[in-house]
Length: 186
Image (cartoon, rainbow, N blue to C red; front, side, top):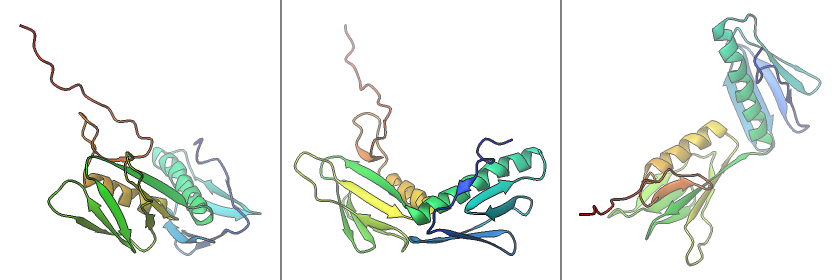
């Protein structure tokens, strides 16, 4: 049995789950509404505020989908009730970030600014930076998959380089650093 798949998903009081035609799971809560199509072989049921996911057999295909769909549905429940947050730090001389509505403006050492349009589900803010600190971009959303994709896209604009660590990194991320050139002794 899958360790993740067999765990029940406890539903908070403000969250409602409905299973529609075609095995489509809809989760609605105070922060929004999300839907996920579940494989027809996997059975999803809701009883007394607890959602369970069951598989028909122990085939490798069913075992892999069992834990996957339980994790996706759990993320949907957490998202519509609490939400998710991603913080990214901009390390480098002259790196700046500003938020103007749904547009994020980056200065990343290029000869031009980069204007990045955020999806409507994501809210962003860039707190004021004190002298000697690196700028931070905070993004919040109820959709964990979308938030992760947008955060990865922002990070790809200027990935951290391994020598000085300059670039866009997640707050708390440990970078693998390389030693620079060393003078040869003659």
